[in-house]
Length: 201
Image (tube, rainbow, N blue to C red; front, side, top):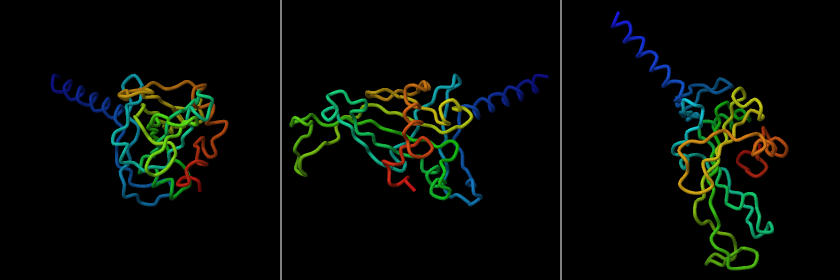
């Protein structure tokens, strides 16, 4: 009896770990072609919060839009550089199928501009006059899961602080915070592919 209980306990622990951790190797893409890259999929806490993705700086960089305060009456909604990365395994599938697969993660690292020297918020550096990256300022993460995020177009939106250091976990943002704008204006599958030539196919 004791042995059976121990085995059952170990099995329950294994299931719990499998639920929380979702990093695995995917052998085939949606079109059946073999993949050579392991996918990093979203990880959640037991309560459903998203865990800050690991090693995102090693992912595929897709672009860095900027809407500085100085060009938006001092009140830009997003005054930072948005350094956007996509998880490499998901990008590999996207290149082959033209669709973002379930589990796709976009990581947006926020980065402030260096202090302004001119009225338009720009400054002059050896390369010329412009806007230059400064301090990091937190991160936003977007995850595709059409079942989990059915109410927000199949994507979940998370904020890991708008300052440093980044929070280790984040709660799902309400539809009014991020999803609404993506659903209304993003070009493809609620993703701003119009700003990222690497994705705009």
